[in-house]
Length: 332
Image (cartoon, rainbow, N blue to C red; front, side, top):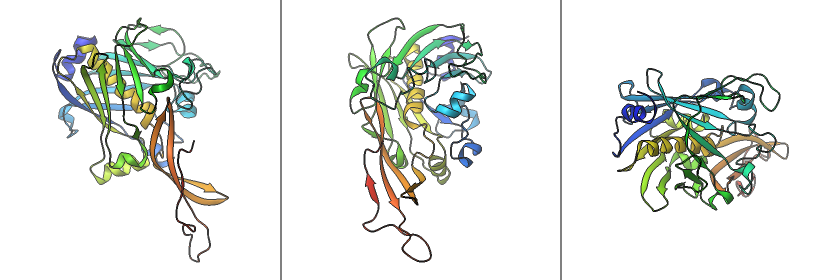
């Protein structure tokens, strides 16, 4: 059994039933050691409990993207995510057209206000497995390994999601179109005003999905680390954990939309290497840049940072300069 019915069976949550699943992203030692200079394709495991034991594993989500885009433009790159059972049967494909899908027109998603089509990030949700012909991307590179920019095979779009014009103001916002050909959204996912950065260590980020008439459909919560190992992963990698909940009455398509929205939110807001603390130089001297949190302003993701400078005036090592850390809020 494939498609949305197969997805519902694999989730062990029937049509219209409420329930929760837990999604955990794999982490890479090479990514951590290089500070994100090497970017690996994301892999997620989905479990029915937060014990994350193999016996509770339900699904595997494999990202496919081109090497050149992933290394140069992550997390804004094009990607296809295949949601499959443990036997490799793909139920749903999430297609995201990143910065190079229409280069250079679409080269600024997440980096400027969503005032034009080229600045609006989004996904297309297909039923079944969709692939693309490997081809040279619009940058002229021929190192494609999965997403491709050629013809799609077995395309079967059922719905889509997109950042609205002006990006929802001060709250990260994504509109959901339950009919792929519709010009008007049927629902909306909205997140918190502040998220990411060091706030990830102590505050959950809650993204709620509701229809236009206010009916709750689903919820994606980025979980805080609760062990020393998870804290180290948060500090050194972009590996994250999510709880995805489905409300009573949610259909198979709405469950697929909720998972797709959680993945899009992960790429848009939390796929940031060294997103908390970064070693840098200020005035030719070493300094630490601490990202307290991120904020969304009309679709642009803006870090709120403070910089601790070393003045080099004390013997035996550097110290924080006079007046303590220098705070640079809303720094781009």
